[in-house]
Image (tube, one colour):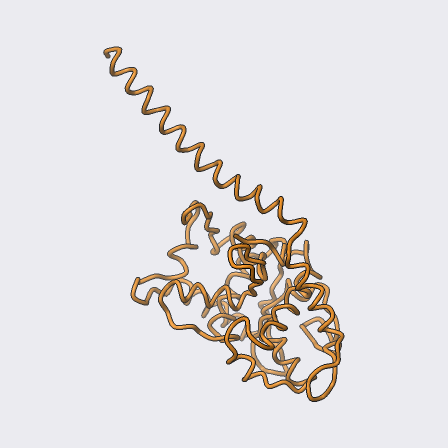
Length: 267
């Protein structure tokens, strides 16, 4: 092999090594960026608002939410988030945190849950639901996800969520699995967790609600999933839909044992 060929091969190897290091540095850089901001995560402001809303007497009934049952008994908040979505006997359906809050706000305070669900994201009482979700999720930070799968409806919703996760459609023939169904995928500089198994499922599901630095908003899981459907060019399933709850069950069950870090910080 000539000296010229050796030099060319050495140059190509250096370029390839540089590309690998650049990719690694990008991922590490994003992680470091989040870590620097985490101490001053603006989600803490929403947490404070949510805690106040939980105790505040509101609505036509002028009642607080302190008797709201999130699955562990009336008024019990700690540990509830890591066991949601789950089946509730009073509504006879599986609910996630946000849809369960709609039920409590309607039954305890007299709000109209259907009207709140129709409200555009980020408007009116939906902002309060998101703030409540931020505080409630923070009360379970560091705890392990352990969604129940005892009731037949919980098992059914898992299977429905699984089918929805892999269902392709829309103008781009996308599915949730197109981005989140395999290891080592990324879009731009963003790593995409594999939501079909641990640790990706726990890391992905366990981060929402989250404050998004790019738009200065706190997003709950409902908005996160609806925006995924928007990017797939699907119609919005709407707030508290069975489709989004089923996807939450699928991801949450797959993420069993993962640690909740919500409300987290996102790009």
